[in-house]
Image: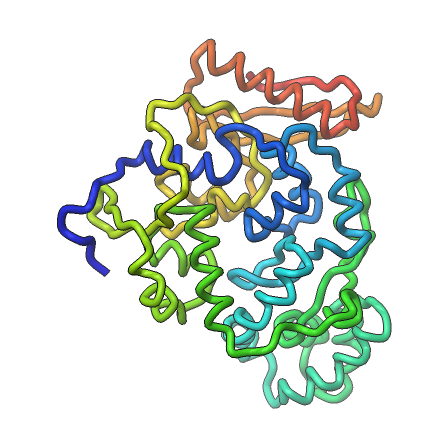
Length: 368
């Protein structure tokens, strides 16, 4: 889709500041965790502890017990959604969004696993597995092993893997609770939430999904929207919404769409240092990620590296380890030379992060 002539051009720094503001990274928000998860339309959660760091970087006064309470009360769940990856979403979003992602989830699962499932009737597999998950939370391999006898020669792990997309499942607590290790047990959405998925037609859900994406990631191209959601069937939603949207273009000439009331901060506004968890939305939410990570470092975004934003863009990675005394050491690995002032800002934020990760115990900072 080409850009409209005369559309305002937004440079990379303007797009960066817009992303930071909407992702709650330009300044921490005075929101509760439930509101933040809803605002962000979910957080990446394939690494179960990472959403806690994502919320700490975005919210004032966030404490892990708040998110734990939401998970245990089932107001927030971990389920497979955008791009066939696990996301932490509100229960309401789980019920509304899973149906519009279902076809994509199955297509991606069978595209990856189809050759390893010869002769497996997917409808029969789903029908046999659903009551097992509904009866009690189980791991995917456990259910795969329970059903493997029906399809000799098929690996139980492959049966379990495809079931994660065939069936609307949620990962149950205690997995995902703060500093807890637990197997990835799954049950059905119906068993966990006591409610059924939203029924179609889903045009209103798709329209709302596009608007929510633009509010949190925009201005953005349709290719960015597709990369974030994994959905290819959104042109109709964009066409329905277009009369009410703003249009810009980026320095490459791509058309960028936006909702009319979302913030566009001054490109010169200072951006604080922020420590991002693995697979953070702010990085993975785009096809063109250059607004936040340089092309030479783009690969880090899909390896699980934890990233540090300095002046709004990725300038370092970070790791953490628990010390023998129970405190946490945060180690920073710069990707470019940092100025004295930048090192001071990174060190201060790293010390705060170390204290957070250590539940208040004084931490240490290494590498800068």
